[in-house]
Length: 168
Image (tube, rainbow, N blue to C red):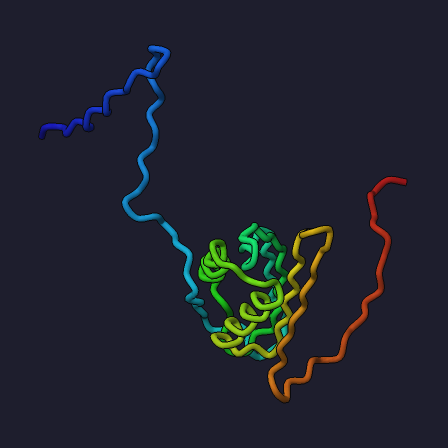
């Protein structure tokens, strides 16, 4: 049985200095991921208990709808799911979809909350958006949603202990 040989490598071009230019990787015909406003869910693996799911999104970007200048924020999402959890890849693509949109800080933070609530119907969700400085002012926007008639379990305060290093 004859072996198939690998296709010949594309010839390298000479750079302006006369040396062979490095071969650049070709872009795939379709990007592996693309921004999307579609959020996907999966069944909560433990709907019988309240537990907190926390998402950290440290690289959120959009731009000011008035000036077109970029805005950057660190989002923290604390959520107590009911029957559905939000799928991480779709959440990532969702946040990416804002990159080229103009949005006021307050509006985009509330819209994100509304969109997540629409698909997951959580018992509780809090989104904290810490916007980086703009004109010498930091802006923090905190929005919440509680499911009607949901009551959180009483808080349990555990004792705190100093960190142990193992050294005397």
